[in-house]
Image 1 (cartoon, rainbow, N blue to C red):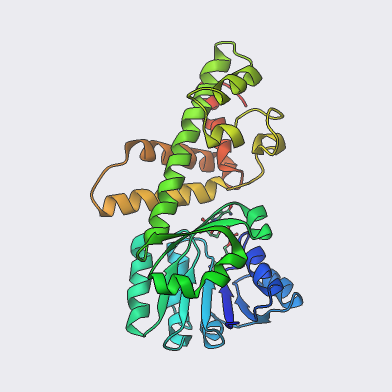
Image 2: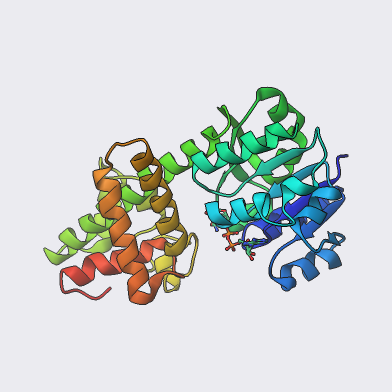
Length: 300
Ligand code: NAD
């Protein structure tokens, strides 16, 4: 089994790293925060003092960081991963970041004879804990094949999405669709209930009609209509508004770099930013429905 390194032990990274340890991999870990490092050391990992040290001790380094600047810092910064990896090693970046940054890291890695996959995931922390994430992988097919065992430890549905960066492109496209659909579903609830509809009846009818969607089935504004809905628990995440705003920012930045507009995406980004400005950044992104209601003079 290959010697692995894992950097970024947050809500997603920590349970993913724990699954690798439980599957028998020897793992060296690093995070800016000491607590998750200590927990994983107790579970059998070795701690490193920097990304470079992780890289020096690993054949494959996995990163699960917040966004593009964090990945650039960990890869290119002083004591970064690229200083420590040997020729022939592999980077698997599982963070959701700008695909343009992915390609920049991959190009710098390739100059040193280091392989790279981008492998962002879909699924919240419970799926990370169960090892049932969906993983979209960009990069050379032979590198994808070499890393299958590692990816299967963390995910259930693992898809080769194309060349380097394509995992990120497809992940971001999916989040764009989900976020825009959210605004549509929540406005439908606002409209229906303002005009007197019962939210349960509205949910039942929409579920069996053309207004149905994944967002409708998981994230409606009203509590106790569907199980496991963030509204049942004061919008506890799930996937936070902070992360959804970050992803929409990445989407608009990449579209801007390619010089084309995304109108619904821009509006949706501003709605999620409004949720953040109203103190909802750490809530599930579906708490954005509160802003839609507020604009109509309603509390939800
Ligand atoms: P998180 O903020 O909980 O974890 C990020 C971790 O990276 C933190 O522990 C932080 O301390 C660490 N970190 C940041 N900069 C660092 C550095 N320079 N060196 C070392 N460690 C550093 O985020 P998360 O929820 O685990 O998400 C990680 C990625 O996965 C994000 O890109 C997110 O968009 C994506 N994602 C999250 C979810 C979810 O439901 N949380 C679902 C799918 C995808």
